[in-house]
Image 1 (cartoon, rainbow, N blue to C red):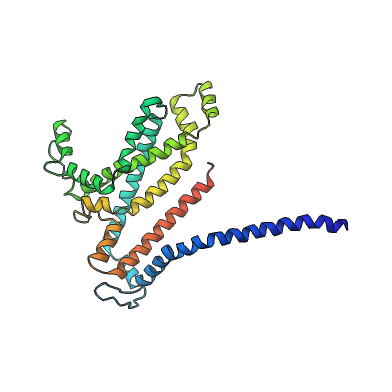
Image 2: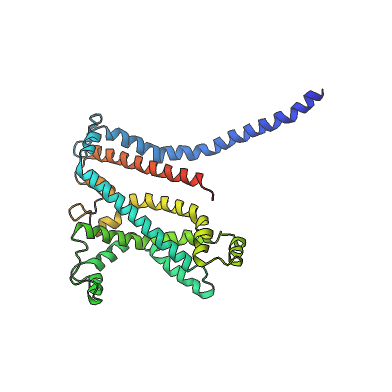
Length: 305
C-alpha cells in the first residue's frame, strides 16, 4: 500500500506535463498553418520554378533540372552582384553600428530637456527610404549637388567627385545614404542595452577609479554584446534585401557598379521575364541568409548575455 501511495504523485505530474505540452502544440497550430501558407508555399513554388525555364513570355513549366544553377555558376553578373551585396551590407552595418555605439555612449548621461537630442538623432530612421534616396541623389548630383559644392568651398577637393556616374563612387554614395538612415537603429538598441547595465557594477568600477576607456571596454561593452549581435543580424537581413534606396539613387548603375542581388533578381524577373533563372538566384540568396542567421544565433547562444 505504501508503494502504491508513493507512486501516485509521481505519475500525476507526468500526465499534467504531457497534457500541457500537447495543449501548447495545439495552440501553435494556427500560427504554423498561416506561416506554411504565407511563407512556405512561396518558397516551395520558387524552388519548383528554379528547376524550369518558366518565363512570363511563355508561362509553361518546362523542367530543365539544374541548368539554371549551372548558368548561375558561370554568370559574371551574378558574382558581381553578390560582391556588391557583400560590400554594401558589410560596410553599411559596420559603419552604422560603430556610429550608433559612439552616439549611444556619448549621449548616455543626457538628462532633463537635453534628452530631445536623442530623439532628433532618431529622426532619420523614421524618414521613408524613398525620401532618403531622393534627398541624397540631389545632394550627390554633379553639377549642382551640395556635397561637391561644400567640399570644394572648404578646399577638401579640387574638382567635383563623380558620385553617381562612376561605379566606385556610386557605391560610396549609396552606402553613405544607407548609413544615415540605419545608424539611428543601432543608437536605439545600444541606448536600451546601456540602460540594462547594473548600477552596482558601474559604481564599483568608479570606486576602483576605473578610467573612461576601461569603463567602456571592460564594463559596458560586454553588456552590449547580445544587442550588437541581434542588431547586426537584423540589419544584415534588411540590407541584403534593400531595394528602394539603391534603385531610386542609381538603378544598379553605373555599369552594374551598385547592382546587388535584389536589383539583379528584379531585372531578371520583370525586365527579362526569366522567372526560372531569377528563382534560382533567389533560392541561393535565401540559403545565404539562412546560413548567416544560423551563425549569428549560434554565436548568440554560446555567449553569455
